[in-house]
Structures are given as structure tokens and as C-alpha cells.
Figure 1 (tube, helix red, strand yellow):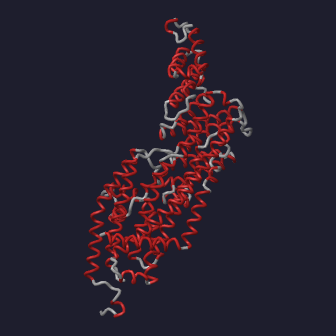
Figure 2 (tube, rainbow over the protein chains, first blue to last red):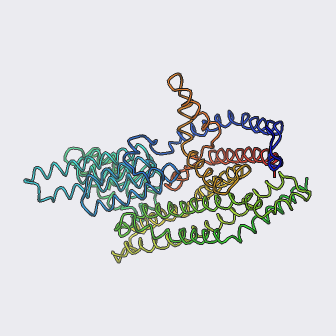
Figure 3 (cartoon, rainbow over the protein chains, first blue to last red):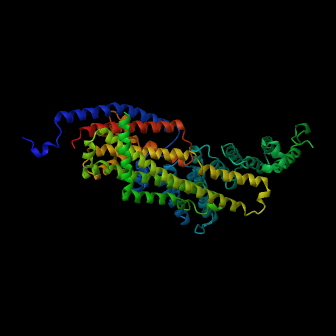
Length: 275
Length: 307
């Protein structure tokens, strides 16, 4: 069959087309294996650095709407997570605690390395939801209210602990967990541990250092020795200038050490303040 | 060699001028600047009331996400719309015949077009980043003022060295989050992702017959690029369990489509996590080499294209 003359100028001869295809195939063929190796290397590095949120599983896809799934797939995971966080706030205002909890889980699954979601999520569950459960007059009796409240405290605690697993150097998560143990669960030993660890994290505020000692102080009925050791360690950490200026509640530390030295009858030569 | 570079740069400069004259792009850029600048409005949506207790982490995250998101989305739209028009418009206006009739190689023409797009994207990204920086500065000012207001509830706090130290710590925390030097890395990553998208769109436009085809195909490749990692993992792990068709499809995606998802570590930077420069350079190097390969393939296809 003859090619019409009008088509002659727009068609490439077969040999030229083949040469073009061969050149393109050669270029891509040389690049493709290098590309795979390089991408695997980058992915390994990102895994080691614990980047990227949960992979897009069927469950995650079902929990997100179609639009949000497309958002995640087009590289806007953080914007989608922020958008879902707005739903958390809405559910909080509406006292829809179970829905709020589901949204918090979704946000933290999308961005596990964004500590703010764990921090705020834990606070919403362990404090707002649990206090609301405590005040819920629709429950028939106090026991039910306490049980429901404890349920939300445990959920909040779980969020904090998972947050710590994902963001171990974020001091606020350690500190918030400590506060939860201290103020809601009355477990001062655990609270002391979390406050102490919080104070060791980068950029932690200095006041956290004395919180663990205060926790031992709360345990003073049966753990004066530990409280004394904590207060002493705190005093030793203060610089001479801080001690002189009574900065960071140096005076409180001093008075606690003096009180415990007397109470525990520490020999004068071993006391921090022998006079 | 130098004359060739001169020709490429001249075409690039003209491409930039033509692009700036396009009304659609100007409108897009204005929208982008407005959205980036208004990203501070999103901060209030974080967790209302928390700013009253001096906690700004969520608000700052929202501002950063909205600002960088706007740069990424509008940058992508600008890239897509301008690159898709580059060659079809030249063909439609028949200006390409005049250019190629002069001692200008096709490769120089194509590279010139790419350079023009690089200049355009540099300009747009720089403008949007400036608006973003101004927004962050505004947010910082607001946050510091509100923190001070929280401390001012106790009128004698300035006399207490402990409270002053706490205030300084809080303010330092806000400033560290807002003036995070890693934000430069985030913008750089977005910029290189846009350059990769430009190279993809340019490659498609070398054989496409319409701008719509280039826009749609580039958009799909961009989307699939975010799932390339999943396809690659499946392809490398799949043995006898998967069919030839499955293996063929995911293999095709893994071997040809760039991994766009690696660049989403911008999210990590915005969430306040440290991304080492070595990893950044690895990613930028990957983008550079990919762009070179895409340009080389584009040049081969365009060289053989009947015009």
C-alpha cells in the first residue's frame, strides 16, 4: 500500500524511528538499574532515620475519604493530617470522644514523627475526655463514671507512650506522661522516672529537673532516701551562680535537703549543709 | 561551546519573558502569594485556646505546613501549565521554524526551554519563599507577644529569676521552631521536585501533540511517582507468586517512574525533625541525575521528531 503524498512529510523513515527507539531504550536501560539501586539506598536511609508515616494500607485507605487518600498519595500527607486534626478539634467541641480518638489515631498514623499530634492527642484523651467522663451525669453511678474516666486516661497514656516510641527525644511527651502519672494516676515513682527522662532530653526546660525530686517528695512516707538522693543530685547540678542567686528554686532544694538530712539523721560529715 | 551556552541562555531568557507575560501564570502566582501569606490564618485552627497558655507548637506546624504546601501546589501548577505549553505553543505559532532555521541545534532549543523554566521556577519559588518567611516572622511576633501576655498575668514575674528563665526558654523554643534553618532544606527539596516535574513534562511534550496530553500525563506520572516506592518494593519482593502482568506493570513503574515520595521528607522537616545534609545531598543528587537522564532522552526524541 502506498503512503499518500500528504503524509510523506510527517512520517519518519523506519530506520530513523528504529534508531531513535534504540537510543532511548539504551539510555533508559542504562539508567534503570542505577535508579533502582539508588532509590533503594535512599529508602533504606529514610527507614533508618525513621521517616515517613504508616504505609498506605487498605485499612488506612478505608479510614480516609477518597479525596484525602488522593491527597496522601500526591505527597500532601502533612496537609491531610492537619485537615484531620481540625476534625479532632470539632469532635472535642462536640464531646464525641470515640470519634475524636479515631481521628487522633489517624493523624498519628499519617505523621508519627510529628510530636505535636501525640502531645495534643494524649492531652485530649487523658484529660479532656476523661474529665468529661467523670462529669457525665448520664451514667447511673459514680463507679461507672470512674471506670469511663479511667478508660480515657489509659487511652491517653497509650498515645503518650506510643508517641515517645516514635519521638524519643521530644521532652514534652516525657513530661506530659510524667504529669499524667502524677496528677491522674498518682503513681509518683513512674512520674519521677518520666520527669527525670524529660529533663535529660534536648531543649528541656530547667524546671523539669526538680519535678522528679518533687515526685519522690510525694512518696516521702516510704522513700525518703530516694527523695534525699534526688534533691542532692539536683543541688549538685546547679552552678555556684545558680545556688547563690537561688535561681531554679535553689532555695527550695536547699530547704528540702536540710529537712531530709535532719529526718534521716545523716552524719554531719556526709551532709550537704552541715551547719 | 561558549556560543552554544550563549544560545541556550538566550532561548532560556526568552522563555522566561514569554512565561512572565502569560496571564494564567501571573494569576496563579498572585494566588500562591496570597495563600502563602495567609497561612498564618490557619494557625488559629490548630487547637483553639492553647495559645492562651503559651503553647504554639500546633499553630507553628500548621503555618509551616500551609506555607510549604502552598509553595508545592502552586509551584506544581505553574510548572505543569508553563512547561506543557512550551513546545506546542512554538509549533502552533510556527515560531519554532524561524528559530530552528537559524544555526540553533534542536538540543540547544530544548535545553534553552528547560533553562527558561528553571529561571521561572527559581523566581516563583523565591517570591513564594519570601512571602512564607514574612508570614513566619509575623507568627513569631504574635507568639512571643502572647507568651509575654501569659506571663504578665503575674505582674511580678520579671523579678523572679526562675520565671524569667522559663520565659526565655519558652521564647527560645518559639524562635527555634520558626527560624529553623532546615526550612531552607524544605524549600530546596520542593524546588528540586518541581524541576524533576519540569523535566518530565518537557520530555512528554517532545512527542505529545497537545498541551492537554502533556498536562494529564505529567500529572499522572507525578501521582504514580508517589507510589513508586510501593511498586518497587512489590516488584523486588515478588517471586513466583505474582503473574507476569503484575510483575511487568510494577516493573515498568519501578524502572521508569521517578520516586517522588522520597521528597516527602519535607513533612519531617516541617514537623521539626532533623534531616542530615548527607541525606539531603543524596536526594538532590538523585534529582539532578534524573533530570539529566530525562533531558538526554528528550533531546534524542526531539532530535528525531519530524517538524
